[in-house]
Image (cartoon, rainbow, N blue to C red; front, top):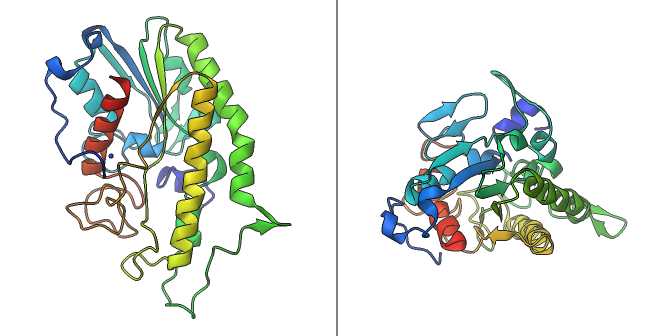
Length: 287
């Protein structure tokens, strides 16, 4: 899954209750009625396949967490330019999609922007390749475990790539602020995809590999949090509240879909239920 088209299909909160995000304006921050909100990000933010898709090339849904957040806040203006397959380079340059190029996401920012959510980074290091590389249809010991495949002279290749990405994330936050100096900027982390030990064969990833995926994702989210802190931006934690709502959970409880989705969503991406709850995490953080 190294092609641009393949990346558009992947992308690349249990402390919060499963509730609708139709909040009243009285629960929103006092300045919400004047907010100009811009949502930037990849498929974890855009909501591929979730009805209704408002931009086919970017696989963007009007029921993603940014849309729910904007509705709940009653913002004055909402610009959602999230796009499946986006990486940090697509913040600065046009992104190619199956329906044509889209403008650099940073172009959506203006001097009057007051709120920005930024959900990016997984595609820069092809993080969702872990989900495909670790798929094992044959039970242990007949399959091929993946957890020991990513070492290089005693270092972990995913963690090395994560460390190398951090300066680019920090620079991106700086560049967002340069274009939107009035805005509160929030970097958004990635959700929990598998529980400790996994749930083989329901989700065909061996237990040790599931733990490796969790550890790699935690390391990546810790990098995002540290980058946000270093640049005095906010950080929205989706990993903690989505514990227990991963791809192994029942169809009524899960917020991200397994390899074979049980609802209209892309494998290992948030479903509509997840997007509603991720909006709650955003709203709680920005309040």
